Structures are given as C-alpha cells and as structure tokens.
Amino acid sequence: MPQRSASLEDAEPARRGRRAAPDDDDDLQDDGALRPGDVAEGKLAFWDDDATRHFRAAWHEVKAEFVDDPVTALTRAHDLLTDAVNELTESLLAERDELDPLRGSATPDTESMRMAMRGYREFLERILAL
Image 1 (cartoon, one colour):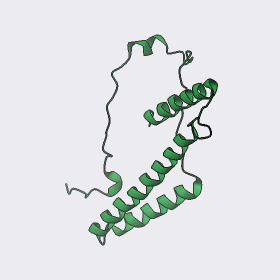
Image 2: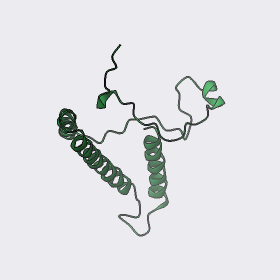
Image 3: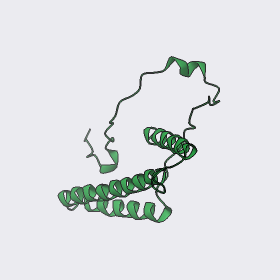
C-alpha cells in the first residue's frame, strides 16, 4: 500500500506546558458552582473577524505554495506565525496594562488596588486556560 505524504494540516501540533495533576477536590465540586475566590473559565478572544480572515487567507497562500517551493513556504509559515504571536503578545500586554492601578495615580486607594488584584488573577486564569 503506498504511503501518502503528510500535508501541513496533518501535522500534530506540539504540546507544551505542564499538565496539572488531577485534583481530588475537583470530584467533590462537580456541580459547576463557583466558590468565593473562584474565577469562571473563559475564552481569550483577541482576534476580530478581519484579523482572523487575514491570517487564514495568508495561511491558505502559504499552504498552496508548499507543493512548488517547500522551503519558501516553511519560511513564510514561520513568518506568519511570528506575526500572529507578536500581535497576540501586544494585545495581552495592552490588556495587562489596563489593569494597572498605578497607571492613573501614584497612590491608588485600597479598593482600586483590590480590584486590580482581582483583575490580575482573572486575567492569569484566562491565560492559563489556553
């Protein structure tokens, strides 16, 4: 039986990061209710429709180029991914900066600092859920 060559879409993405050990408490609290201090799981959505279309269209062009010029296609794929990561990083940093209570005042009140800590925690939890 002839082997087919793998396309770029067939490649399994690399898995990085640590997997947390299962928490025994997770079984005890499986009703979906949040306890005080818990953060609801959410999705990070930084891409508007235009940006998504742009990156997908660029990927389609890169993928089509692979057959005729794999080396150039790989270079373009690398550059496209770099652009996407840079845009995502800029968005994440901008959102983080919006949470900074010291941004608008040298001496924020305790309540604004408490709210900033809550925002930082929620933002971190959203990032860790990726």
